Amino acid sequence: MCKYQTAALLITVLFSFWVSAKPLELVTLDYPPYVVEQEGELSGVAIELVGSVFDELGVAVSIEVLPWARALSNVQFGRSDAIFTAFKTPSREKFADYSQQVLFTQNISLVVKRGSQIRSADFVQSDVSDVAICAVNRVSYGPEMDALLADRRFRIIFWRNMAEDCARLVIAERADVWVNNDFGARSILASEEMEQELEILSPPIEATPSYIAFSKLRNRQELRDQFDQVLRAMKQDGRYEALIDAYFERLRAERKKEKG
Image 1: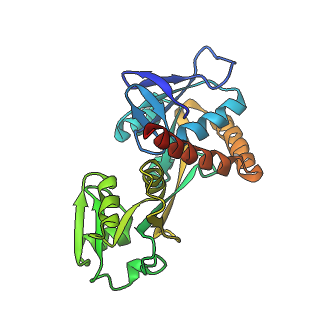
Image 2: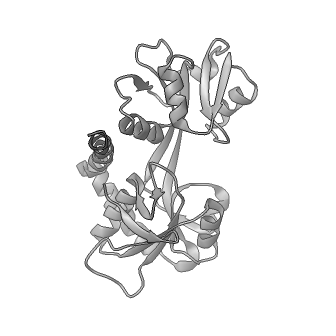
């Protein structure tokens, strides 16, 4: 897997042989599997995608992992060039120029044991009083699911600190369903070798696009447009999906290697 060395959470990544005097300064947060900062190394599917685009543009970048509020502040006040992966809101559009191309559509999905009769299409509108669900503490799953959880509409709600614990509860048939970010669930199923036992249902119950957004104070509109052009081309020629699929395939391979 593509990994990068970091010191004090500052990760300088040179994606091309051309090195500018001052690399483009990007900020993000530790958000597996999009961005993973672990033991002085940075990896993740968003790191690989953003890196590939800037590599094609011949632009060197540095990536700093920060708490989300501080990362947004850096872009707002021109201390950093861009932030990813960011949801688009009216307040943020006042200080950030968002890409037109979506980096990732961050889906909220249901995960069940294979063979389950649960369906996701109308799940949040249906009677869930006989469903046992697992969710992670202090995570938002979109307004409709959050309301169901807050109103305790389910037969049982298992609150856990780790999504992996929810996966194990579904496998053990203590919980009927686990709600999670789609890529996060894919990452867990691949790395924990649970794909034969668990299924991520389609369609997702919530879908929110996320982007790279450039600081207006740094006047990066031209670079934003160039980023869009490359990302659009990657989606059209299949490189986008290939990169994502390859990332999760490496997770599976690494897990098998660890187990010997």
